Length: 168
Image (cartoon, rainbow, N blue to C red; front, side, top):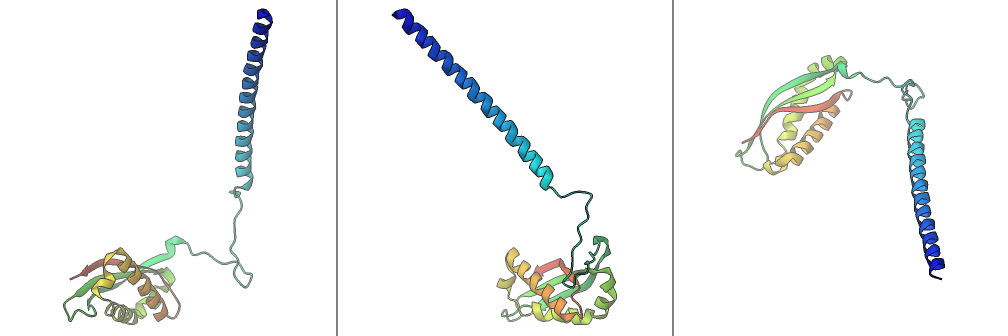
């Protein structure tokens, strides 16, 4: 009887070892198939490098993209502005430049006095607390860009750059 029990235990151990090897094999095959399917799917769904995408306008005509190298930077020079609510105690000194399309340079140069007025009137409406910190400066930049674009016959200002910004 002892021999029969030993042989049954050996048989169970052999079956258990085989099932572990089978399970590991199935796992490895599944892993390889999943990886291959993921790679194949990414290759299938990836945009083709040879294809050109064309953006269409509302009228159904292709929209021309402006190349990056056709941009120009125009200086609006320096500004010294008394800030609101300080009784003349706080002054903002800044230099402003605007990034525009190269073909808009003549228009922007012609409208520079109007743009300078827009900068001065907006800046004088801000307080020291409004301009404090990065958030205040970013909010001022965004509002300034909107004002400058609304002052021009056609929105041209892509970005407003502060090359000097000091509150005293």
